[in-house]
Amino acid sequence: MTTAPTRLAPIVDPTAVRHELADRLWRLVCEADALEPRRPGEGVLRAGFFSFSARHDPDVTSLVHHRWLRDVRAALTMIDAAESLRRAELASRRSALPRLTPVSSYEAHVRRRAIAMRDEAYRETKGAPERYEPTLRAKLAALRAELPRLHAELRRARADNDGVRIEHMRFENADAASRARSAAAHAASAWIDAIAADPVVVTTLGTVPARLDDAANAIEFLRALALLAQQPPAQAARAIAV
Image 1 (cartoon, one colour):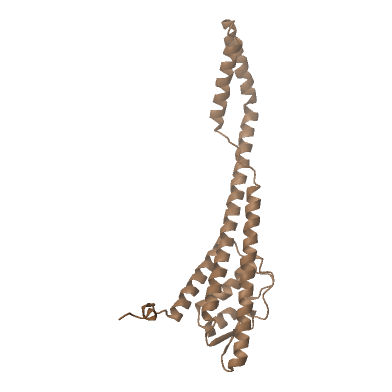
Image 2: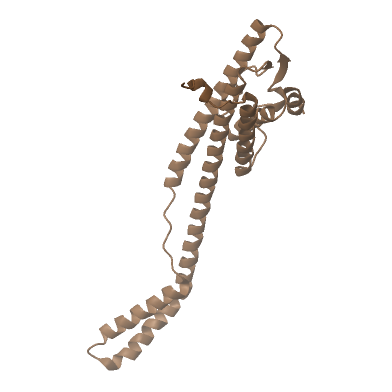
């Protein structure tokens, strides 16, 4: 007797799936927030994001619920698209950074110059060995006179390299924060799909929030969703309104 394929399929607990998605969303939002210093969002008020009601009238609440889901999905799509553009711009600006200047230690540089001068003095006095010592002393005296300038050039090159490295690190951190926001938006989309049939209606998003291309605004919206996902609806409503 052959077992029906449906009997072989694992039993998936929808509540456990939602909890797992909520935990992932919360972790990603915290990661994105930690990677980039947060400032107050412009045009996004956390207290006005969500309110809750029970599904009393199936026709009315279903329409409101689907409108809310549609607006949230549109907002998440906007965040993901904005972050993709941001990363492309970051990559372009990073590739335009100047290359690092190869610099050796000051002592090694001076030593190489002294050896080169010794070889020059030898070549110049090959036919008159008695002139070697005076010629070498004159060259070394000229090198000693150049030491302050050479030292300044090396310090300037090191400072320039440090500046380029700092810019590379800044772009790398910004890219990581952008990727974390995109990952949070994807996790939020999966969570929204998982709660689409829930009996609680989340309303009062109104319209898609403005300026979600701004990182701070995107984080405010994603944080509100993560808070909603982490807690029972009534608790989340009170927490968001604080």
